[in-house]
Image (cartoon, rainbow, N blue to C red; front, top):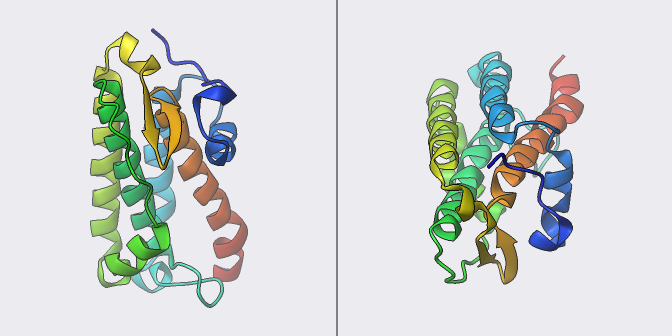
Amino acid sequence: MSLTRPLPGEYAEGYAPYILEAADGDVLALLQAQLGEVESLFSGFSEAQGTFRYAPGKWSLKDLLLHLSDAERIFTYRCLRIGRGDATPMPGFEEDAYAAAAKADGRTMADLLADWRAVRTASLTLFRGLPDAAWLNQGTTNNRAITARCIPYIALGHAAHHLGVIRERYLPALK
C-alpha cells in the first residue's frame, strides 16, 4: 500500500497545519530527503550560532534541532503503538518543558545532528516495515483519535514548519 495523505477525520485539528505543510508525493521519500535537508542546514551553523535566539524567550537553534528529534521520537513511538494495534490512550507532551530539561545548548552541533540522523533513520525503518493494514489502525493521543498513517505526514510537516521558522526568523538575523 502506498501511503496517501490522511483525511481530516483521521486526526485532531491541531495536526492539520503539519499535515497541510507536508509536501505532496511519496511521504517516505520526502522524509528521507528532509533528513539531508536538516543536516545540510544545521551543519552550516557554528557552535556560537547554534546558541542564537532571534528573540528573548525563544529557542536556540540547538534547542530547535533537539526539539525536532524529541518530537519525532514521540511521533514514531505513537505510530509503533497504533500500528501494532495498541489502543491504549497516549498522553500529549509539553514541548517547552522538554526543551528546558534537555539543555541542548550544552551539546555540540555534531552531537545534535548525529541524534537527528539516528532518530529520522529509525523513524523511516519503522515506517517502511509496517504492514499495509497497520496504517489504518486508529489510536488516541492527547485525548484525540488519530490513525497511524497520519504520523509520517505529521513528522514531515512538523520539521518543514520549523525549517520555515529558521529561514524566516533565524537566518535573516544571523546575516
